[in-house]
Amino acid sequence: MTKKKGSGEGSIFRYEYGWRGQLTLDGKRISFSGRTKTEVVEKMAAARTDYSRGQYVFNNDMTVKEWVPIWLHRKKRPKLAEQSLIRLEGLFRNHLLPALGDYRLQDLTKALLEEKYAEIFQKKTGKKYKEKEYSHSTVNSLSVSFKQCLQFAVEENLLTKNPHDGVELHKLRPPKKIDSFTMEEHQKIVEYTRNNGQLYWLYYLLISTGMRFGEAVALTWTDVDLKNKTIRINKTSVELHGSPIVQQHAKTNAGTRTIAISDHVVQFLREVKKSLDKELNYRNLVIPNTRYGILTSANMNRRWKRVCAILEIPYQGVHALRHTWATRALEKGIDVKTVSKMLGHKNVITTMNIYQDVLMEQKAKAADALNDLF
Image (cartoon, rainbow, N blue to C red; front, side, top):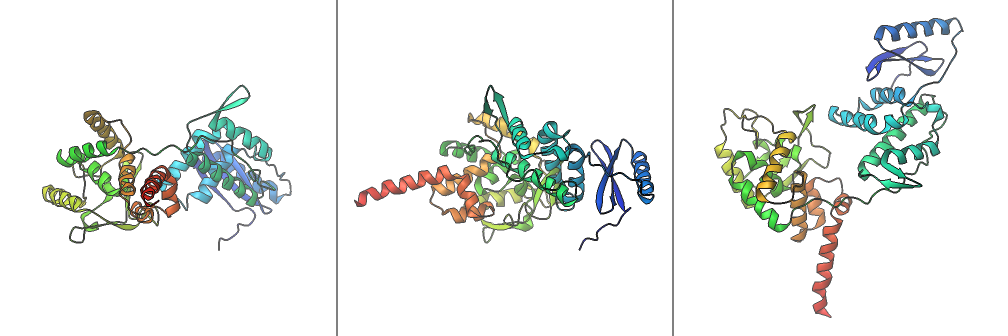
């Protein structure tokens, strides 16, 4: 159980706009900001002195841009991986703080939040809102996170109730159709990436197994069982400021899994293993870069654009290779539950939502096939 701080106890930390300090006085969390740490220390010392003399006046002018970093520092940093924290900070910095950062927490209302969300995610033309190209996941992630942020303000006695309760978002664009390649394009990709050397091996592995990019580049030979034709996925590569770091766990709990691979993939991996220099490949990576380091998304995305141009196929991101594998698997009649487990999705509903168009096509084909019975 976390020990509740008594009067006069506090903490100081750095954030985007300078330094921030907090004290607990009379059971209330009081915040102080300054350009330097010394300035904050002095303000906190003065507040302690005034409080001990019974002269401190409680005030609550905390703004959203002052409160968000406190919430991130105290509630999210201990729980999130660094890459996830960076992503969350960017979400607030790029979308929410420009619209709401200067508002006091006390001035937030349900109506104001709904209005600002509309400004953030939709352009207003006359009396109507024109939809922007934001995904549901982006909008929902920000909304859910900000609600948690404001709930923490309630817990810290800065707000009496959460103004985010009951907030409704304006109608957003329908979910984007997933990017995947046609069967003809698929065959071109397999042929080219299978037979043109180390620079293209990763693309073949992705389209042939459905792995995520981070899972594939972190894969080591200890995870591969060629005899039993399986791959164990139990770690992933994340990039912090462009530098890849292997985390010794999968993206999610469901991401830790064992997948089956085809005979073609087994033969491909045998050839790859034979061609790698064991001494230089000290990380034991299955698909390293030409210097035997971890492949990065920026380099692979640039090269992938060139591959699409060479093959004269429409450019779609590297993640489309994973979608293409899943699409072919469903088209071949593999049940959605098995595909879901192979992809490492949390549950089958996630898979059904992502590939609903493919599943509808399969249902239509099944209905047509039954026509012969009547």
